Each structure stands twice: as structure tokens, then as C-alpha cells.
Length: 245
Ligand code: MN
Image (cartoon, rainbow, N blue to C red; front, top):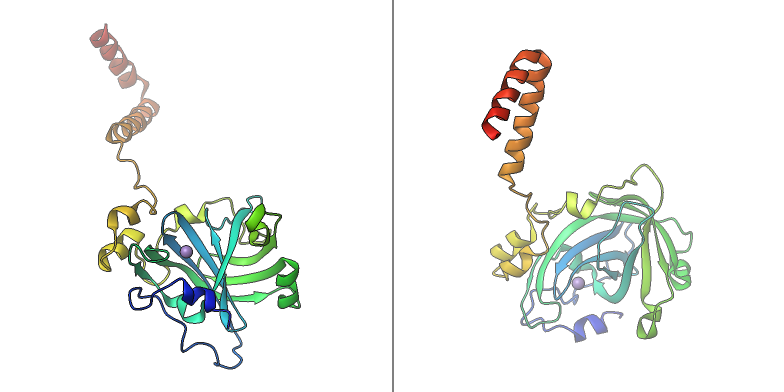
């Protein structure tokens, strides 16, 4: 039903993404799927999806979710996706719609905190609880006043204050797939994608900075020695002084 736009944008003979043909009609399920797919397309973004009425309602979150309630994240609503899409991790061929690497960054279930979620979505203020591996607790999606054509599709994704709120940057601290533990570059490598492009969506590796490490190790050694006895520290200090002058 609502998948026309999704299907129109894609060629399923070329892209490995699910067409959603065998969709819905599963009857009433007690739990609804929640998934976030990290997508290194033209721009890196996180696709935030909530199962509702047989499809996945979808928002593209450029900066990804934040666990800090004071940080509101822009979420642009995009076309509904088939429920099977929640399991898709792999490579969309370059030149196709959304070409690039897709990772299942987080998954689980969600429950509405708004008594009537359909009305809440219509109103543009959906409160819900996430039961994921990375994102948990209470959240809200609020429609915001966008500009021009985006006026109806701009939302904000905000963490509510609860025991799962933190100022840690979850996108940096937990960059791996929730289903395969791979980084974007690993997925691209395994599935014949553009590894160079994918790696730009992974966090930069920790700075090697051998000089800094050696310096701080030396500093620690020096201070511990200085603590145990004042004499060697004085001796070393004077030695260095004579050397340097
Ligand atoms: Mn996307």
C-alpha cells in the first residue's frame, strides 16, 4: 500500500534490497520492529525505522541519534520501507538509489507511549520506548516547522531523561553492526562495495601519536620515581639541565 514510492525508486533486479512483495498479512504481532540502519550513501546518515501498520515508518537522521536529552537531532521523514528491510545489511550498487553501504546499527522492538500512535503521528508528536541494543528507554519524535518542501517531513528525534540518557556519543562509542559486529568498511569489503567510501563513515582510528604516548609514560615514570625518593629526581633533573645548556 504505502510502498509505492519505495518500489518506484529502486530496481530490484540490480539492488539486493527487499522488494517487500511478500509483505505484511502476518496478522497481529505483539511486538513491533525498531531498527536503525547506518547508511553511507552520498552523505552518511542513520535511517531510523519503526514498524507501524505493516510497514517501516522511516526517518533519515543525518547526525544519528543522541543519548543526550539536550541534543535534538534532525530526522527527515522518508518513504515507508517494507518490514523485511529491517534485516538488510549489505551494499546497494553505486548508481542505484541510495547507492552505498548499509549496516544494521541497532535493532529491537518499540512500544508507543502515546495511547493512540496513529493520532500521535498525525499530530507530529510520538512518544515511544525503544528496546534496542544501543538505544533504550524513552524517546520522542516531534514534527518541526521546516522550510519549503521539507515543511511536512522535518522532525526532531529527542531522548527523554531517564536512566538510559547519557552525554556519551553512542555513534562514536558503538560504531559496529548490531547483527554482525562489522564496521562499514568490513561490510563493503565483504559485499564488494566501495571500501574507501565506506571507511569514511566509520570512526577515525585512535591517533597513533607514539610521541605523545612515550611522553606521558615517561612523565608517569618520572613522577612515581620522584614520589618514592626525591634524590634521583633531583639528580636526573640536574643532569638534563647540564645537557641542555
Ligand atoms: Mn538511507
